[in-house]
Length: 184
View 1 (cartoon, rainbow, N blue to C red):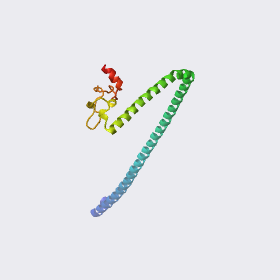
View 2: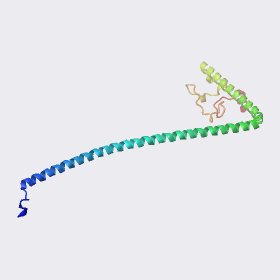
View 3: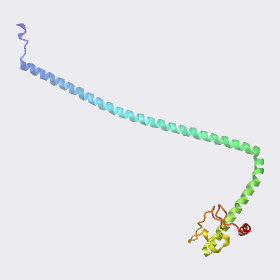
View 4: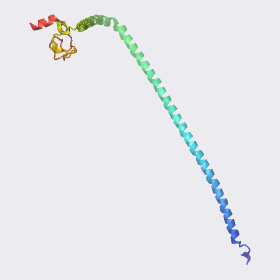
């Protein structure tokens, strides 16, 4: 029996198995701790990388906006310059003819506007005076009828329907002599 001396005591064999298991558990625990720290550092690095990529993307978009704004402002400046130059060329060629054509029309328009402003201002002045005196209803120059006024003195007529001394569509009174010619 040559192999009888190799047989170990079962208790010793169990102790050796337990010590190997403890070493295996410790080794596995070390490996898991190292893997966990590696995984934490990987997640931290990925978060930092994602933040860096977002920051770079925001900077790139900002640079693109700046370039587009510069391009648009250059384009606007060139278009304005081209328009001003074309206008200057046209005015240099046709300026005298345009002024000859436009001057009497501008003069006539300004005279017409002054007449309208004067008529409106005098009507407003007369209306204000008669309202302040309380004679609005009695003044034939300011409107011909009580049907256009409420108890508070506010003009309630509808300009397109009123025929009581107002110009149709404006609410302004007609002149007295015009009313007399319409009646005859």
